[in-house]
Length: 214
Length: 154
Image (cartoon, rainbow over the protein chains, first blue to last red):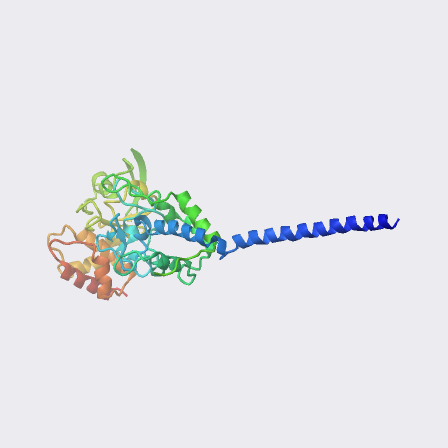
């Protein structure tokens, strides 16, 4: 009788202990999983940095960086020369009266005349410059800091940046840049738009890590 | 070919042209409005400047298909605008014109400047007019005329 009593106690106890152990293990796995996905999770920093380099390669391609200048003028062409016809930035990045951006750049590409176009064609603000005053692209670390500084990037957090890369009309233009005056297609960024968005997403989910300044 | 309804100097005009035809040639060839000039065809000189919804626009690079419902004002219609009249009066007063070929574009750009900035600084004038070229080099008189027109405007 006594042994039966002990046996009847032990089985539920074992089950209780096993259940508790299982719960503890499951919780630990869940915590580890969340840690690996949590922003600034150490396990994803390397992946995030790799993703950032892909994003950086697009941001500093001519179709993007030509309008992210540090000067009072835009650039044009794959060689990123100063925009012709004495075009100026103007107080709002839209040119000046008499020579606005939209004096030539319409709401869509004009392939018959070789003038690119998109909705509300304008320069990025100086706070979003990705070049120095000598028209040289800034290093990866500097561009990363600029793009993640909410006091400079029109208060965009990671999700807003992702949405911007995914949907903004002038961003999308980079992959449909139209024909040059000679009839040839303008050079596309080094990644497809889908690849660019995927890299942005990976970078955002990793906590938007930036490489250290060199 | 396609048919477009254009609003030119307040009048409705209908044209039937290839959609890729630059507005400049629609004005000159189809509507016989030759005040707007062809200088380069690549938006570099400003001789083709007209206004689209009040914005100075280089008509040589804008296909007619992209004009839409925007109102077009050419040199032929600018005198109906008080700023346009002041600019034209100043152009006459200062004897700006030499050969005259660039001047319709110069006037259209000057009007756009003064409508946006009635009291422009020298820098404003230089920046706004810097894209309008004059091989006769009437730039000094152009600048004087803009300042004269500005003083006439309240």
